[in-house]
Amino acid sequence: MKKHFFNCFEFEFEATRLLWYAASGGSDYGEVSTTTEKIIDGNYESWYQEWFKIAQKIEQQAVNYSRFTKAKSYLRASRYYQAAEFFLPPKDARKKYVYQKSIELFYQGLDLQETNYFMEKIDYRQAKMRTVFFPTAEKSKGTLFVCGGFDALLEELYFTNVQAGLDNGYDVVLYEGPGQSDMIRNYQLVFEENWHDVASQVVQYYCETYGLSGLKVGIGLSLGGLLVSRGASLDPTLFDKIVLYNYFPSMVDSFKKAIPKVLHRYLEQGFPNSLEKICSSYISRKKFLNWQIEHAKWTFGATSLNGLLEKCSKFNEQIALEALQTDTLILLAENENYYDYRLGQNFYEKIPAKNKKLILFNKINSVSDLHCQNGASYASNESIFDWLH
Image (tube, helix red, strand yellow):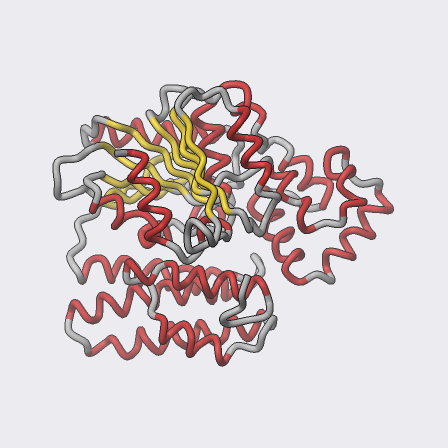
């Protein structure tokens, strides 16, 4: 992977992620490149400070703009606030503040540009599960039900999938579940392996409330791919088609790429107490690995490394290998940065779905070979809608 902004992988990936939104008005190359020049490579506090500054600057400058110009500024600022929040620890008080700022400006931006959408909050356990409905102006071909994954925010999905869905004649519903966005930040609800319980309430609500009919397409980004594949396997009536954007392996398998091979056997059975302490110490010295593990503890509801492994062992692909019959499109990146991409090829070969397709993205047949085709919004959406049509 050629470095454009940073030597630090996670910074390079997240800066590219911001440019992913540019096609839908969620960022600007000049703003991203100028901000990255000010960030100290690998310094998480510097990352926060500079994205916060540019978001705040754009927000303040937009106050006296005309309505539609202000709308565009607010949408971009919302994503820069999201970037500022990204690496902050769960207990950092600034994390919730900038998260709320990103949400506030996002919906102000939609309202100012007169976007047709409906925010619906669905009762789920003790929480109000946020969903957003974007109806197409054309005769609807069906509905895309889109969820994110390990670290995505609900509003981020607008920039990755909504406009493409509307342009292709689909209604789009964005939804979050336990472990994500508001559900973890405001209700402390952690990820649930039975994702069909989450998705079925969303699908049922929209079919009943808005009378949606026709094709039901479940789209899961990143870890959302695993969640959606599990959901469709546990409830075959949930979706007519699913898109794993990207495929994501069993959670425990996803840890293997970042942890020395000699320790892999303990991921299944747990670490002996003395070794768990050594591994926790090792992880704490690896900045990005430590961020991944601490974020996972927060969103899966674990307090120790062994506790996290026990929780994550329930998030596996076994049920899909046994029961996934739903038509399935799998997007896979050859230079996948979070797991061995060959796990996705193996998954594709073994699922029992009769109608399935695998698209392997690399720099030969496409323009991105990274997780979720990071930065290549057109290439991935074109593949999805070509398959649906």
